[in-house]
Length: 238
Image 1 (cartoon, helix red, strand yellow):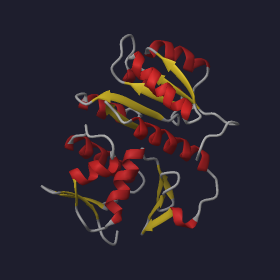
Image 2 (tube, helix red, strand yellow):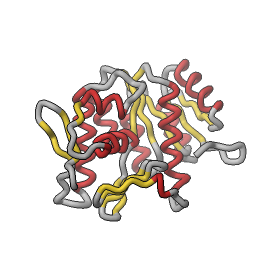
Image 3 (cartoon, one colour):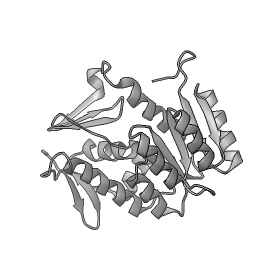
């Protein structure tokens, strides 16, 4: 989906670094979005209680109210609002916590603006394609698994599995060659093509969450296998 002059999605940028707010705002304007910059979590939360934006780009480490607390507050009033975390490359635990409390995705600072805009577009594409017509070539089927390549959604046995953009990209990578092992380096490059500050532990965390989401709808799901010392694979014939 491309934005138009008729419908502009609003995107909140919550970050205490002025240069990041300005740079991201500029990039969003070029893509046709309406940026809403906030320097701290408290001012953002006050505004969100009046009207929620269409998407939030949220720094984790901030004074007054950090990004994790703001995310919890947002999720208390909206489970569906798309949210992307920004974090430094050293804040591994915070990134994992952010995903666990409701973040849709994250990027490490310094990040690629092109990748950030790509992930914003993907999250909005999900919204725009809900209930819409989907071309046959945009659907991939692997047994009970159905992947929609346009809106980045997944179904298992006809049940929608809500995945983050990164989780979808990891699953897509694993299902490209069922039965073949993908090591963590390969998965990192395919899930974060422009972001080098991702660790093995982060990939493991994503895979763990991916499995948990499938197990919530199918307690016997076992298609994503760990090959110890090597990486992961999607079971052939699954």
